[in-house]
Image 1: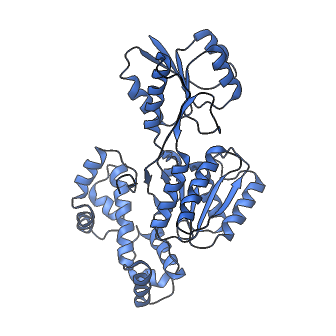
Image 2: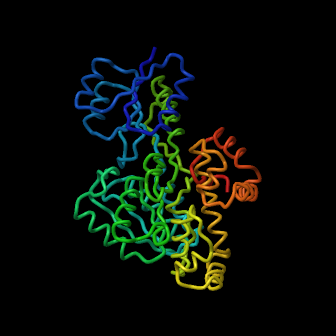
Image 3: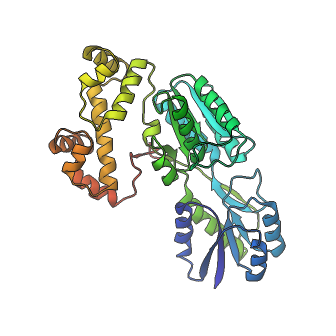
Length: 392
């Protein structure tokens, strides 16, 4: 039997990919551990046959070489890795973010990253490169605090103030790419505190699609789906070849993300008209209530006819279309995450009657809410949907 140590803080997707490959190797036994000061001593005693991990610490890398333990890293943290690695193509992630915002009609762009972090620089540079190819520039802000706690509203006071000032001075509307979900979460907290509206003022996109952070963020966070399951699988395949002697050279493999989980933070078209942007925000915040076009027009201090004309000019659709879209998104979320009856979902989503919900579903999906729920639960879902750029 071969003992394979997995030393990582990685996502469930990464572990699923490792498990999928390991299931084809009946002689593999997986051992999941976390890095610790005693880990090299434990390795010296246990002598694993191979190791997969987020390998960035120099003393651990040197210790693995000294113990001659075959290892594969899945970290993009280092400029160069002394062991073979398979990791996210961060530059490709940045290019994908740029494409997302360009397709939504944005003409202003910004990037929030970490100072002196390789993966952050690669994501930033990929974003800027893709924007430059289309004739666009990018406003960049990088923070030196490298440990962002998404469960704490505030970080270092100086970092908070600098980020808030930067967000305030950005032109409107702007597409903001935060190089990971922790930074995107941080940006939403600062934006809320200083009165910057997401997504109407700042449309926000993170990366790595951490389900907990993205779902609990308010508004919920759109995020690039890093291909962690594929990375986990390929790490195992590379380790297998290395242990058998078939792979002697150090290789550096990058796997590009191809899809984005679309949620509320970037689910918007760039709007240059302030009245339309304000009305769209009012709709997003009140769609599940019993509101009408009259209420929307009153909230932004224009007549119904003026509101409809502005929406047609800016978005090519009517205010009631935007209202129906938001209600339908809320209903879709409830169908996927609860067992509520259709009648309750219709009422809780702002529809006047269950039949109105059924008609909206049939128009968009060509099916009923019940069948949508059944089919969606039989396949992976991403709240408000996924844009797959590999198949476009």
